[in-house]
Image (tube, rainbow, N blue to C red; front, side, top):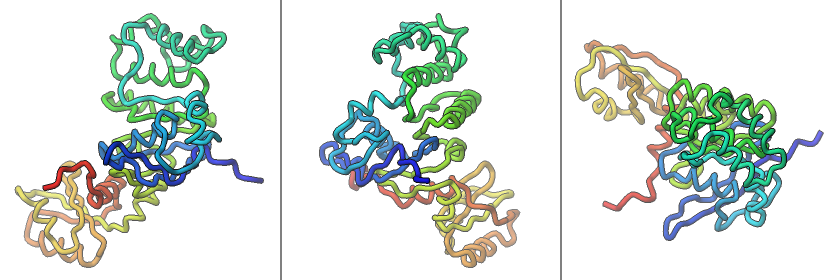
Length: 312
């Protein structure tokens, strides 16, 4: 049986703004029903990449398809087939929830708008708040309304740009339960996020830094690709311990996790020997731990350079 074509299949996409090369040779494939996560620091090109995929920006060069449409020639057709949720709430705060959804349905020229809006309200748990002004909603409810508006025209692809920024942990958890429910129906999701717990909920991930996709794959594949060994240092430590550990032979990365420090490196024996010698006689304990996804991404970030950084 022939495998289905990817929902997103692009090669060598580039975008410049003036002299800034914001996205560099982006190549990406995302399969139907997959949840693909974009991670990376602010200003790394995640939003620009998403906007090129959904037809809001035309790539300067490159090729590929989104939902079977050419990303260069068919941007108008792509825009009508995807649901795009922006970083900031972009609906009308002086309209009610129901009025917002009805307005979006009008823009799409949808027939049977009332039925469509009522179904969206029911599906996202908004029916009891249908007459509430959007401007009075909390971050979590605004997020839910924004998602409902993205789903009105029954898109096959959702592009979500940091959709859970600024909402509480319960709202984030509820949102991700909804995302997995949608993916189970065959909807494909590409989502950018800064949260490691959200990244681990994705089927596959891509780490983009300053325009370049540096790594992609499952969480386990990305961690494995960094070839790091990690030790946890805990106990009674004085000031300056992290800085001292960074200077040890074999130490590539030192990151704080609560009261524990994770020290990672590529040379297992050298790092273990350096750490054991340093903490000898101190009220500190050392144990080998699995390298976390956060360890892997911090290591990736260390190797990337901000293209917008002012020269010294």
